[in-house]
Length: 189
Image (cartoon, rainbow, N blue to C red; front, side, top):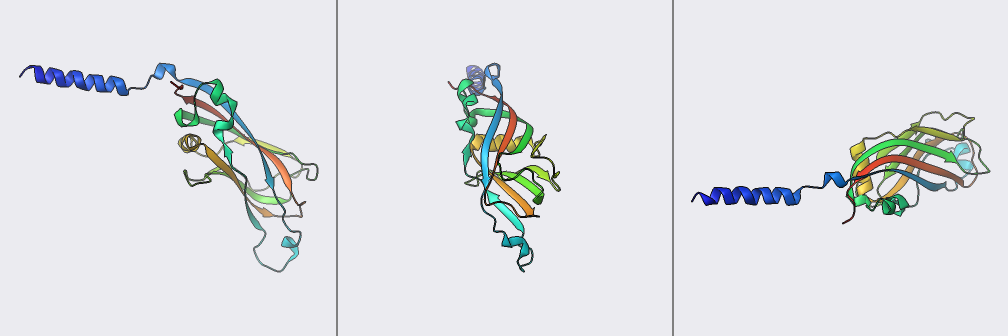
């Protein structure tokens, strides 16, 4: 009879030990994403036509994957094994010969969204009135670290850009969007 409580305690301890993560083996590294995004044609007639409130635009980028970045392979981990995220900076940079700045828009908001609704959209950058002389912006990433943890673990993402058109722009604009994170994750077995 006295053996049963001891056996139960030993069994409980064995279960706890086997389920514990090896925190001393966590890998920590910086991840710098750099994705090329295109905003495709906006008709010149949008500003001059007679329809009210049609100058607001929402543009989705193509799909990207965090796992495509070599930093995961170098650190022998994967997005699903990331346990902690610190969101650092977001950089928006024009990469186009036809446009030199973002003065063509106002109320610019950029979100990180899931192509398959695996996580809620995250506002990562907003700029009500972009400075007419700047072609790039660097800012702290908006959004909570816990939101980015979920997004990185789900792997697939897109950028959703929302703005109000102020002036005419060429048919297609190309830009780079870069996010910088500090990640911690379990290495592959």
